[in-house]
Amino acid sequence: MKSIQYYGPMNIKYEDVPIKPPQEGEVVVKVMSALTCGTDVKTFRRGHPVLIKSTPSGFGHEFAGYVEKVGRNVMNVKVGDRVVAANSAPCGKCFYCKREEYNLCENLDLLNGAYAQYITVPSRIVEKNMLILPNDLSFDKAAFCEPLANVVHGVERTDIKEGQTVGIIGIGPIGLMFARLAKLKGARVIVAGRNPIKLKAAEEFAHVDEIVDLKKYPNPEMIFKDFTEERKGLDVAVECVGLPEIWERIFNCVRPGGTVHFFGGCKSGSKVSFDTTKMHYGDIKLMSVFHHTPKYFRMALNHIASGKVEVEKLITDTLPLEKIEYAMQQHIDGKAIKFLIKPWME
Image (cartoon, rainbow, N blue to C red; front, side, top):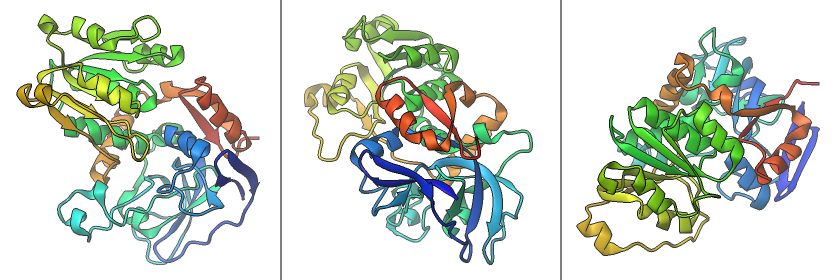
């Protein structure tokens, strides 16, 4: 099959590789739609010791397609089924799984290889996180289930309520989806960003209430407060960039009694500082959510199938498999939100 293989930072190759035959419980999926992701861009630029432990490796993790082959004892899907699969599944046995904290599973292996014509899905993911698609749902939309599942997890854990004012810094695809789900919760949503493509998507996809262009207003702390009741500050402040300096700035945007959600993951070893007086006497809740669980993966599929989250509006362009390196560079240059990858496209 044709595949993108990851050899190291800034080193990927479009080449022929063998299709891995399915072992017991495994499924081979013919990839019909895949998506680029900010995590893949980070991996392309500097590597990722958790996501890719050895090289060469398959690359990409957001996909949907047809079941091509099944291994022994696969019970929940059959050849020909239209499916979407997550990039991981919890073991159900470790310390965290016993406490239903499935995203913290100690045995959470991450699946790569979506940038290919076929991908062999491990048995645990097949069993717990492979879903059959509704007949009227396209592969293109279904491929958004994995990134949206992370956001659904974040929004549900933040406990956003109707009437609250939610501010989001960072409007890549994750921030945009967070904004859309917050709107569906009945919140008033303000977003801040710099990229004109993403600022436009905040209006057309997320349908937010206020958009702050950080090129014009570089101090979002005061701008956010201007849009809140009695200028007290945000009920919920969400960081979707993953930079320590932005973590510190978003902290200053929330009102006493509010919640700060650090949703963007920073580089390993990063440190931040907060005003402990403001945090303690302001009764501010600090939180952060990582990854998804089977529950939120299913909720994501339901959101997409319902049409309430029009994920197709986040697609910048459709590209063939051999254009992955071009897609990565477009992301680096700030010229894209997400690319739809078609492995069978000529």
